[in-house]
Length: 239
Image (tube, rainbow, N blue to C red):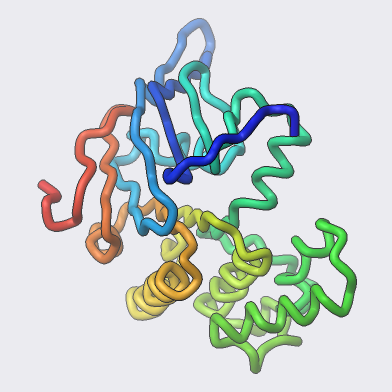
């Protein structure tokens, strides 16, 4: 990478980050000067009403988009100073994504779905299958290695998605409404799993959610309203 990283306690650092979009002849300001940091090992929920900027912020943190202005640093790297290939390398090395819709390949077994990121990273067949098996065992699906998504329940499919997200041992796990397609009981089990991963692996976990019950189980909540931080603190202090 050409941009120089610096040592930092914080994994995520936003300084006056703004993101605007042109819609027709108007400019829509979605993120309006966000400044905060998230340290390594934190467990954070990002909440807010529809249209508050949660998804746009997730795209910034996940290096799927870049700010219109301001600075975003991930693991010490100035994201805005990186080229496309450098940005992809940072994202693939540092972040594991878990989405509401699972995004599993339908005609591929659980173990091969989980191994896919390692295949793209050039890891050999034997090692990537061993690591995929270990990741599935970590999410308590070691008995479903050869099952296709259509043979798995919604909760099991999300566990496969989580295993895929952690197979390369990322510093950061990002969840985008990860329980949105699940019933309440299974959703609680998935949140239990995120808590375990944060505690046992030490990964930083950031969940974007509309569910206050999930947010109250994290250790820090950032609430957005109209693209700005309205609250940033422990769940107990939520208004």
